[in-house]
Image (cartoon, rainbow, N blue to C red):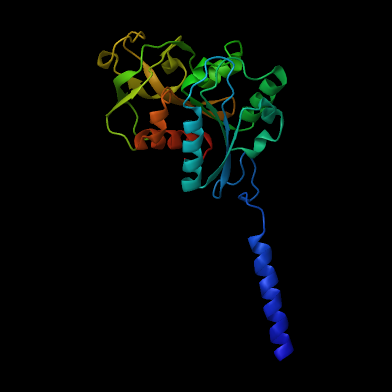
Length: 257
């Protein structure tokens, strides 16, 4: 009996050690669709390659999304290597274009991303994601509107039009903050559901003619798209309300909302 107890105790230690040395990455249950299980952990890719203007807030944005992931159950991979798009893109429930600019993907990478979205993948565009890939029609439709111009960084009032979405549910009817406010070449309201718009009377240099969408979402080509015009400044990513806004957009795009 003493020998048997010793043998059982040794087996328990070995099994416990094996459990502690398993893979660090969350292993959600295998279910169809990008990103794994809808109930367990999931993965998000943050892509921040630039071929035009480069925002100095990119590191702060990556860090904020990593912290959101750690607090809310998703793993974050960040890269500026566009080769990730022709790798195993389907492991990610959502891909965040964080202040990307210019043409950042080649034709094969574009095709892979289109297939990812068509297969149910999620897209999150932050700020200069609207200043990206001007000659790629699919991307233009996915992001919802393209950047035109902006005035200087200043304080403005955002009108929250829909508070039933996870990106805006934490906000009141208005949201006052400081950022760089984009004008867009087209009005996203024609193709997307607008969550929030800018009160052009609250700041100087606005040029959209009164109806000025600022954050929106839509289903497109089999996947989901969320875009916010905020996120130019480093300070944005330390604001609790902006972080909650970004989290809600990620959860929507990842189909976890």
